[in-house]
Length: 363
Image (tube, rainbow, N blue to C red; front, side):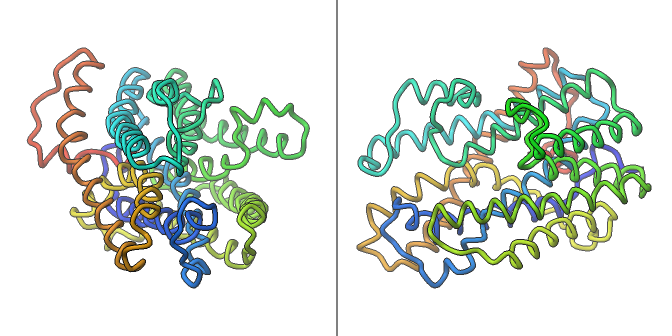
């Protein structure tokens, strides 16, 4: 039976793929379509405009790996694991984005000291303070999901309790979408994306315990709701940017996302697992945090002087390099120290290479 310490290397690669889809969405479509970049990629945008669906994949992966990470952990251990994994790179991302915005981004973006200080908490959405970078909105969605998982760590996780909770969450999602619950309930339910978290958790249960009738029903229902909400969301995005999205493409991508994660849960993709994918997965979070506003500012400053394809390739390479530097010189050295400080105890000695092998996928 798999345990929470298992490393699913293929998820690391899948996560980086999702991040690159989001990067291309921003750099070759939403940047110029949203008037944040003067560099137009009209031809490329015909396919890159679908790149935002990488976020949908992120949420499905989170449902899987965060439940995996939390299984058998105490509430304190779970909180420590989340803080250690989220905040160091996030603080660096805020610092870099703020400095670039202040020094080079005048006329493109604005940032204030109170805004930065609020963003450092990752709870800036509570007092409705603007994000320093547009991509931070997903972190608030993730944070609310973590609170639900934290509640599970207090209650105690069992197969039955988790499945009951997943059906209850799905039921609340339906009630919110039908307008039978007050809007404020969606602060917890997150009906726009709950189907991804629910399905991801159900797929972890499949991975851990095997197929059951409940899982065989729950995941397709979540897929149906994901398709329904994704089509509606695509129409809203299309209206925002004055473009048209193909419902067929949206449906195909969402189905593919579910199919790939189901194959992973069935352990049918183990032949793709490679240890070096750990580094690919490690780049994902800092890449996601750093690329958007910093990239838009660079496009705005040098886009008229450099060939756009050279600039695009160079900027992606620079962002990947910066992401590696954050991982290598911030996250890796700081994480164990922060863990010791928050947990109040020194961990047993584990060789560095073994730490990387044993770490979970939950970033």
